Length: 308
Image (tube, rainbow, N blue to C red; front, side):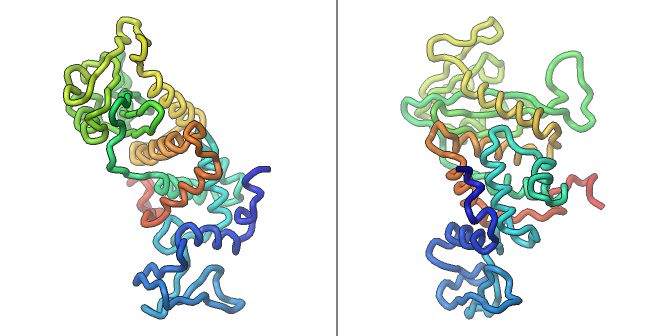
């Protein structure tokens, strides 16, 4: 039976109860003053669903305050549907598709997508890898920089993306200006445990950069080498394959302003994949854990040229 048949995806009161149980596991907490005891549910036919009154600061509130749902007129059950659809679509789901499936305006669907991507963005500071772990490091190029002219060779006109993938573990992706040692090395040093072994191709910006780690093995793509025993970058290239298929086949266009959010979306689904025991329903639950403190205003999400 499809998870979308569950009551909280179709009933507004059930949707509020579902979100409240995840955000307030020990009962309602006032987002204005932090009061957790002197709170009561507001009653009456004209009262909003999920409304509470805090007798500490005397202000009303709902579970939407301080989350990606704040100030949104979209019903909560439709928000939950959108989160589930984005979490369960391996290569993503376009705003046009959400617009058709949810029955909301196209710009509403687009804005909802970006809010959900904010919820997916973790910003973890803990290093990946560890003793006997292997972390593959590679870069890819996508899209075209604004005003960039396509040269006869090279990728200077494209957006550069650096990804670090621990085999059997998680991925972290970064939008970088250029694939140079000066940009790549600090990111790897800040995000990978020194006990891990690094695997890269033979790009010049990887040579002699990772001596502080347990080891650094290289596969020479320039000579037609792709796998030598356990030395390869196939894991990170597999991640890039999913990312590019989604960006080209589903989203088709992404401005530089929003690229970091799309990377967060693909990283989130990879880090919460079936292979590590996370199904669509659990992935949706994980996304809900990230909705607090990440309100994104519509005006702030527009590129400067789109503002009027």
